[in-house]
Image (cartoon, rainbow, N blue to C red; front, side, top):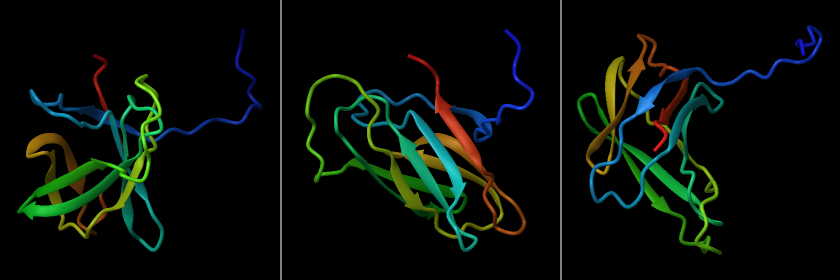
Length: 134
């Protein structure tokens, strides 16, 4: 079967690489993190986890030192799990703070998660980082 040249193309966010594996004992970790434009020149993180059942994620990035952005991640207490199966959770969407140009290490629970480049105009690279399949 050949692709229809007139069919609309689905444009996916650029794949920027893999997320680090969770450290031993981590109770909540990201399976995918994307940086996307959020209007008015701002950007936000979209954080996914693939194993929940009506669970939702809340996230809050915070500058934790020079070149380090700590991602706070927790379950939304207003959404109650409905089963023990694994389905994608409701993604967390959180605004990125203004970051200085350079390379940033994004951490979760104090452990490295991925590297984020910010250009000279203070714009973070858009795209997604995905956790390797288990």
